[in-house]
Image (cartoon, rainbow, N blue to C red):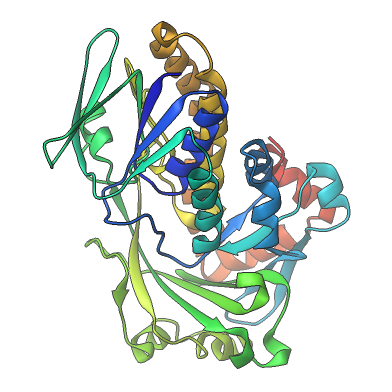
Length: 387
């Protein structure tokens, strides 16, 4: 058994701990916050996420807390027209081997946390902010702001889009600000009129904005997320915002979409960020994972999914002799680089070419999407959901 250090106790970090523990190593998770917890609202999980969760031994528990979605629905947000719908039952589940689901981020996190706490090969340290690493040929050391030093044969930086480990390893500064602001609210489903309820992920697309909603929490809540291309240039994270302000950002919403947006309360705002893809995210016995390696915009709904895939791959590769760790981490980097870079760039493109056009470009977009059959829509996502 060898100690492998994981900096960051989010979804990616905990998933990596489970993956590494499965190989018989001791996973030592170093989390900056005072307690292990996850903030946020709903996230989407494609079949690729469930394959990873199954490999981590928590797939059944995750399914218990998820809402299985019948359709991804694309609407014209200004006219109210239904443009296209990709069915997610029947042929979709047969083809990709798993469902498409939505879940509250906290529910997925709790599933992973419970599994880590039950695993004797996982050690969790909260209130342990890592500020830098150092390494020799045989050992890597995580140095904390508290003056502590943790040593292991490998260190995995899973500390998010503003990763301190990435800052030392890559040194590429702060994240790229997208210029898009997102407003989020979660409301009890009891407050949603029956004619507005559906077991779908529905996206309303408009000029320089889009609005997404879907059920979470076993169907007990409705997750609302409205995004505006407002050329924002200052980072914001979870800042409270007045309901009237949110409504004013989307004046051209069609009637049904407006009714849904008006249900929201206790809105919070973020300015979305990502980074450009990079080729190398390893340094000897150190590697990056998840948002620390390849942060992406939410538009492909794959951030958590790709972090879970990372965890499975890196755990499977760290099954050998400690002397081979640098080579194994390089192989992990090589295996994941192309797929995650493509996902990052596709997410950006969705936010401009597909979700936010206006005028004639929106008409062309609607015509393109409405022409696809269900099978052709499945073909479009096969590289992502089925890989």
